Image 1 (cartoon, helix red, strand yellow):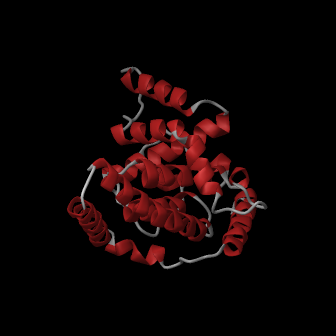
Image 2 (spheres, helix red, strand yellow):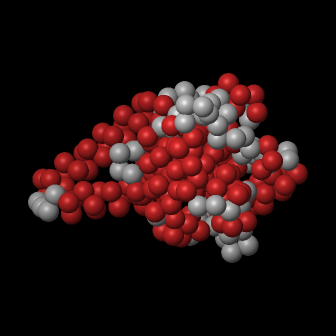
Length: 234
C-alpha cells in the first residue's frame, strides 16, 4: 500500500477494514489489534519525522481527553512502541544483516520497516511471545498492510531471525537459572512446549509460512519488486 493510503492511527477497526487490503488470514485477538496499532504509530512517526515515544504520549493524552473521540491505546501497543524505540539500534542492525547492500533497510517501504522492527523486537526483546507467533503475526501484518510480495521476504527474514532468537532465549534461560543441566533441560522443554502450543493456535496460518529458505538474492529481488509496487501504488 502507498504511504498516502495508510490510515490514521485513530481510525476504527470498521474503517480500517474498508481502507486496507483484506487479509488472507483474519485475526481478531487483542494482541493482533495491539500490533496493528503499533505499526500505525511507528509508520506515522517516521513519515512525520517525529519521535515515536513523543507521538505515543500525545495520543495517550488525547485518549484521556473526554472531548476527543480517540480510540484507547492498548497496553501492549504502548509496550511495543517503547520497546522498539529503546532498542532501535540493535533491531535495525539485526534486520540489516538479512538484507543486501543494494536494498538496505532505509530503502524498504516505510510500512515494511515498521512491521520488521515490531516483529524483531518481539523475537529478541519480548520472551513472552513464542518465536513462532512473532513470525506468523509479522507475516500477517505484511499481508494486510503491504504489497503482495512483501509477505514472502518478510517471512524469510523473520524465519531466519527466529532461529537465532530461539538459541538466544535458551542460552539466557540457562544463565538466569545459574545452573545445572537439569534446569537447562527444563528451559529447553518449556520453550519446546511454548512453540508447540503456538503451532496449535496458529494451525490456520501454516500456509503463510510455506515460503522459507530464501537466500539473500531471492530476498533482494522480492524487496525490489515490493518497492516498485509501493511506489506505483499497486
